[in-house]
Image 1 (cartoon, rainbow, N blue to C red):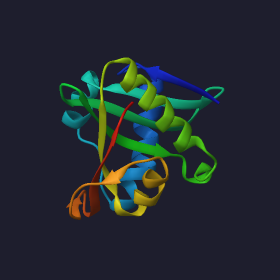
Image 2 (spheres, rainbow, N blue to C red):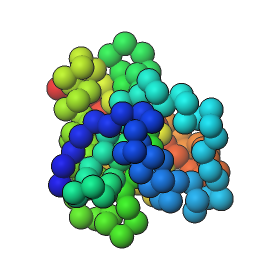
Image 3 (cartoon, rainbow, N blue to C red):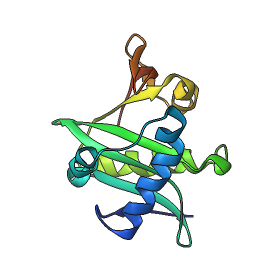
Length: 143
């Protein structure tokens, strides 16, 4: 498995949008708007590949100096539970550290809280609704 940064607008980015749509949006009856995708030009786009096939992806966006937020974490439905998400998170944390960030935050779906807790993240909010489902703010200090 290869982990790498990808460029907005590239063929790999199109794979990323398709994977996120399949895993995160379609099950909720939602889709991405052109405006949402345009905003991603400034984000750090990360993906895991086996040969040319994207297995999973996520992105990082600066919230404030020293803090970066994880967004749009998705692993192909048929490959969940095989360590791809953990590998993506380790890679994302290393990139964030290398770029000087000291804290990583996210809006985690309620169903994913356990996964992130195993990786050292803590819930730091009340439950709230986002994209029609329950979420929590989670965070981790990067050392």
